[in-house]
Image (cartoon, rainbow, N blue to C red):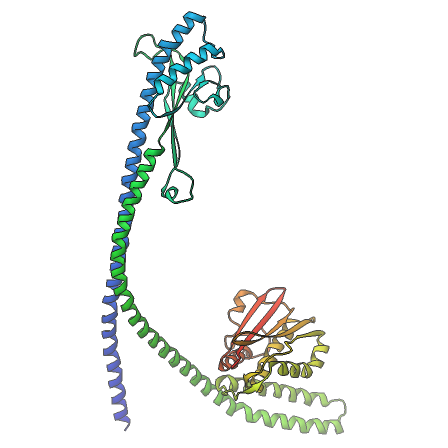
Length: 490
């Protein structure tokens, strides 16, 4: 029989081993196809966006370069026209240039407007060379303003032509309700004397600022960019929809199988854990529980004899009794955790359990200087529960709260009713817990007490979950801790 059993086991192991590679061969190719497909789609999409940006940036750079060249040519032509048709005649007629004179200013203004008519030039401004002040501008509000030329003005005085782009233009500006798109090119050109026509190597008399509006050109570039992007998104969207439909359907099948496998593994691990704990507890119970009972009974008998033979020494035997009682409680905790009892539910009230707890712990609260505050909902409905097990839950949480308030404090117990659940909250004003400890408090055998098994809260969690409920904890160091238990109403 043993040989047959071993053969069957080996055959099962071989069948398991032969099954796993088949599953892996089925999963891995699909995973590779999925990742390759999505990666390819992402690469194509990013490449489309990159080409769109490169195209639009190139178009924008070309537009700006041509506009800048145009502005410089216009400024040079303006320089020539103003010098020959205004500066020289005005010096001959008036002896000097004084734009503060209304007649001279009107002559210059008429000449500039004639030159700029129909050329989409937004403004022309002339700065004085002696100080950073605007001597003339087609925008009358700017005339006389000082120190607004900036770094470009200084470069122009050194003979360098510079351009400054001021813009606010992107695809977002095309959306309704957003600010209008604008783009302005400011070109600073030195205003020089000309010894002869075309020879602009003379002394710098000032700085000419030409402001050109490029908003329409920028809007056209951005609109083209949006159209190309929308076309790319449409093509990618169709490909993505087809691919997603295939992948989602396949993923659902694979996820369902993986979830089933994980659930089976979880159940297997839980069974193995409980089996190990069961063996350990059986061994501990057999080796310790009976001798503990004998030690306790013997200590009680010795205590009675000491009371007669050596009065005043009875406390020695009582120490033995107390310690054996504590060890017996530890063994019972192991038994409760490893072999949890199924709850025997009946209709019961959480308010009744709280009052029962308050009566039982009254002396302990008084000794520990703990003030119990009951905030119980008067019309709290009953719910199906195991009264003894839920009472054990309350005791475990309250003992932890007492341990967290070594110098006393306030313990608040609150009940409330929700649409689908009944809640019980126990709040203390103790030391609180850090987040690291908060994540582990329901882990079996985790404890920060000098004495204890670390199973109290683990047992508490098991009991609440067997009732179909939920337990959670909130804590802040130096403020306190709140345990919240939610049980279904029906």
